[in-house]
Image (cartoon, rainbow, N blue to C red):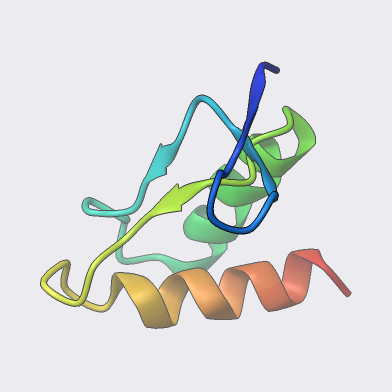
Length: 67
């Protein structure tokens, strides 16, 4: 994975982002997809309040993955 430094805070972010706009309805499938992304080194997730329920689903899935 290629990373770039965020000039505002120095964080290393993956150049490739995971888009959260079209999450499936099944939370187990969301967790499965995110687990694969994290294992591949992705740490940049593109989400926004206008994406239906994506921020909540992302938070729930990442909480399970990072335990």
